[in-house]
Image 1 (cartoon, helix red, strand yellow):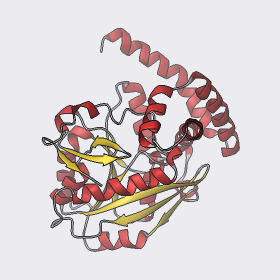
Image 2: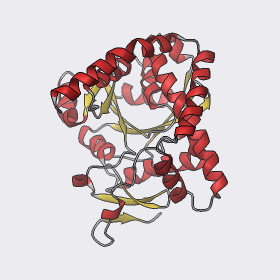
Image 3: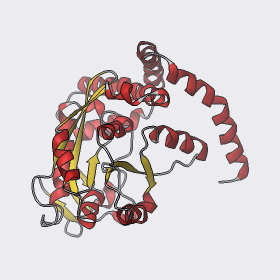
Length: 308
């Protein structure tokens, strides 16, 4: 990136940061009023409308155009909620976030930690993933960590890292994951590592394909591999939106021994759990990302393929 573009990004950030900081201070009724206004603008402008509509149409071929438009409208509304909810994190106390994020089956997760096990937590871009670290506030002497892909804009990348670290969560760049996990192991630091696994793998990592939402889909194998490598317990963190600004996270353990499970078994397990959630309430998944951008590279007979 050239210096001129970096300077423009820096100026843009400095202009918008005070506004973003002030918006985060507002009470939720006003935040959701702003979200509603944003929703109208986003709907009129048609933010990534073509991508969203195509994704929805391919995922739900049985739905009418009216039903697809309704889901798209509800997605836009939720998408704008995500924006203001994320800004609110700048000023959240642990007590405030815990009133808005309910957890279910926490005792099972605690049992893993009590056994001296670390946890690999797999989740998708469903609900509000930026609020997920709050779930770790109830566990003592356990580090919450998450893997992220740095943003190209270094200013907003720093802004998002500050927000994501507000509950003492360690944020690990994707290309540093293994190195940082080794450090935690050497310090005997118990941890729960969050991995968002519904992103499209890079071209060099298209090793496993499955049927997901009626489409040939390449899947990231990181959670399964990391759980086996670290001898950690694998969990699916099922996040549900119970109302605007309120969520529930259910900790679902892998039903078996991850160390002896067959290859791709754990991957299929968490993919099906996410798919079930999306089918039940599709508006809460991130339809605007290009999840199937490498679908044309799928070759039957060459790549591993699961038929569900």
